[in-house]
Length: 116
Image (cartoon, rainbow, N blue to C red; front, side, top):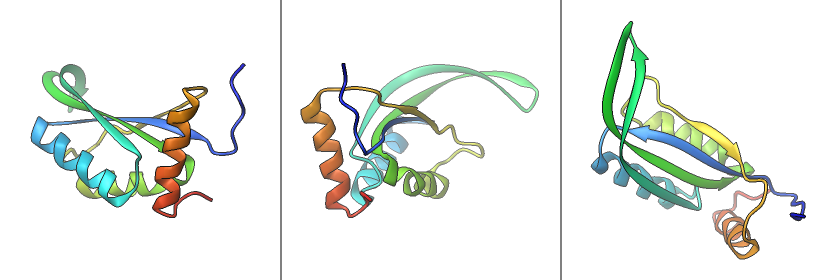
């Protein structure tokens, strides 16, 4: 049975237009301390509806790991840096994980002074 933690942890997903933008945003999010880690996956093929048309294009996915106290700062950072009119930003709770990794995530946030 997974331990219950006071700190809520998240994986946030977003997609960007290309690898260069993915690297730029990943580095800036880590530099600002709004995430502990960003994994870049790509290219991925996305299919979606935009302005009445079905669009298919290659994108890069950002998989960002963070704690609850970093959520608002990540949202603000994405609003500032993202190159899409309507950026994807989806949060999925982390219910369980390897304790050393979860502790590392908490420590990253604490070092930036964002853990409540």
